[in-house]
Picture 1 (cartoon, rainbow, N blue to C red):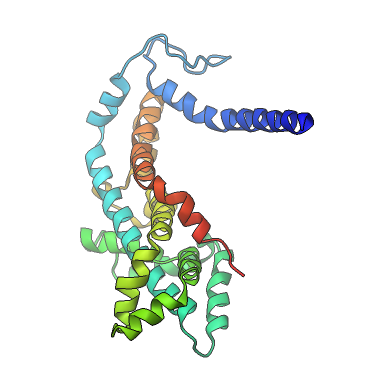
Picture 2 (picture 1 turned 180 degrees about the vertical axis):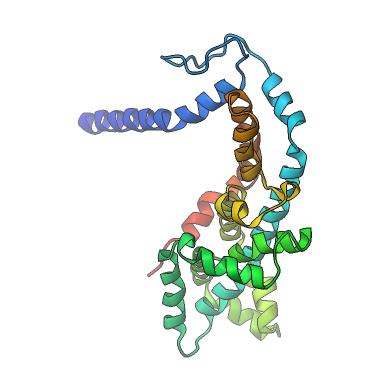
Length: 281
């Protein structure tokens, strides 16, 4: 019993050390964003607590670039991507979990197989399709937003997660609803969907984080600065303030705040939703 206690202490010490190492770059980024121009941000060993504490870097970034515009663009893209993922993944996961049809297993495993294909491998044909459909910001802003959202409107991970969530619901619930006169659509929307809210929340979190931080696709598709999302806009700071890493750090911190807020708002569903998405026998 004593050996087990010491073993747990060692494990916790290792986990704490690894956590501190993992979070240190973010702490350094916050520290850099709060340092004044007189302080050396590349000093070794690094000084975590700023000696010349200032909020001027945040104020400077806010006024020098169209941060509000970048933020609104990111919210539109991330919000649209999350909404479409929730709708389409749930609608695809429901028949894979609750219905029987020819080729069901083949369809499911074919969807899972797409997880192994990185987006970079299909980026060129997707870009050509986007151009052919005129879904670029050179046409109008609406087309530009559609071009940013549609390639990520549904994912194999989302379909898998929702399928597993629907599998965890007893069939008696569905059968009772049908006996009461509910149609298939009513069973899906009024009975099953409310019961998989935790899994929907998990999918929303992962989708939001992925969409909010997406840099490669927007940097390729977008041509107008007024359409930039936050990752592209923050990257643009390196050209505008190439010697001012304090501004770049401040811009990066501002860009992460919405992710933290969204996660905190949804965290109560996170653990239960992950458990519902676990593989069932």
